[in-house]
Length: 258
Image (cartoon, rainbow, N blue to C red; front, side):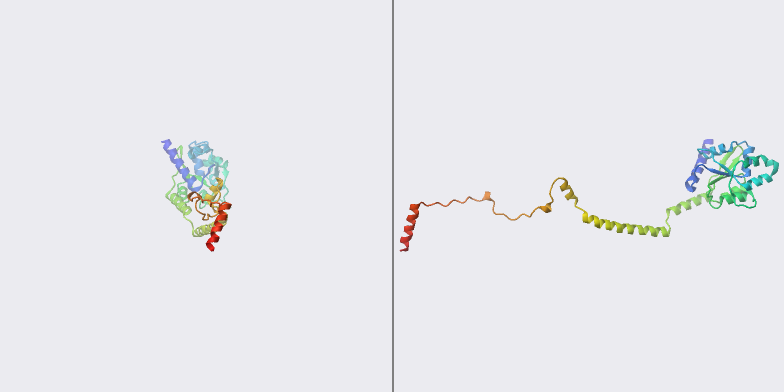
């Protein structure tokens, strides 16, 4: 049973850490009713009990307020021990010039979105009901000798879901900004592309140069040549006549003219 309860508590803490940004060391804001319950059921030391409840790596610091202390003082001897114990805790600064009720003081410290990321520990059922309406406020309470952390309320889960949807969906201004980025990017890319094209060399030429092969454009065009000498017959040399033969041919030519 304790294992299941501890697992549930861890899931609750993880929910607030994921959806609302709670981080260690966790801060616990306690009121007079919770301090009185701790003393009545000997849940001491309180920081160790809360560390076990939150599965924290170190004891969480405890806070109260001057309005809570004033309320405990007014309750007299029945809550004297609770007042003495609460007076030893750190005091969260409230902006009340005049003392207000503990409920109003706690609600003012929490505000609309619990910016200080307080875990609120109280036995006041009315205060717990009001805190369920505020986003990002985990509530701790005691039941006899055990401490519990409330499961996130329906309002808490709805707010977390809406907040997640807002993060996923862009606003109109963000969408317009996003539209400008690609156009600028394309212009810059086109400029870079034009510069690159001027200095770009074909990949084939780079490969050929790397292999020691000359560029084809450097070769001269082949011009038509004569017939293949291997396919032609050799010219026969003309027979050379002797001097007597030349004289005889000349006489024959002269006679022919006469």
